Image (cartoon, rainbow, N blue to C red; front, side, top):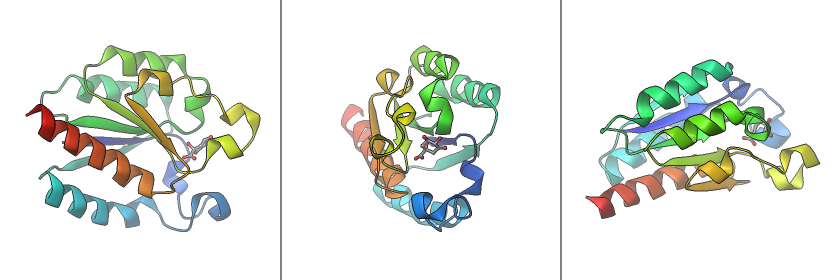
Length: 148
Ligand code: DQA
């Protein structure tokens, strides 16, 4: 199982600043991603979104120790830039965690250039739009297969 955790304001994808984040909601994007993962794995996706730091940490703790977790894909939203608590949760769990940002954070305001979460992850992707989630999922599935 791949766990996708989207952080604050990502429930507004498709409606939120479409020039930056596009016009597709995550609910619209998810079925195609699920199909890709079933065909590649087979691997299922559990999708969670929360605007609360504590709920994101609870989810990392809950799924990050599960044997059935192939990996966690997290878009921490703005928390990426300052949540040491989310970064520490990522460090605490054995599951591989990949950070995804839809926009190219390095081409935006300077405060977005730093992620405190990224150094705790196996890798980080940004600027590929929603395709970044598929890239991360492909990586986790390949990793699972090569460790099997
Ligand atoms: C984001 C980038 C963050 O800087 C921003 O606060 C978000 C979305 C992205 O996916 O590009 O909420 O994580």
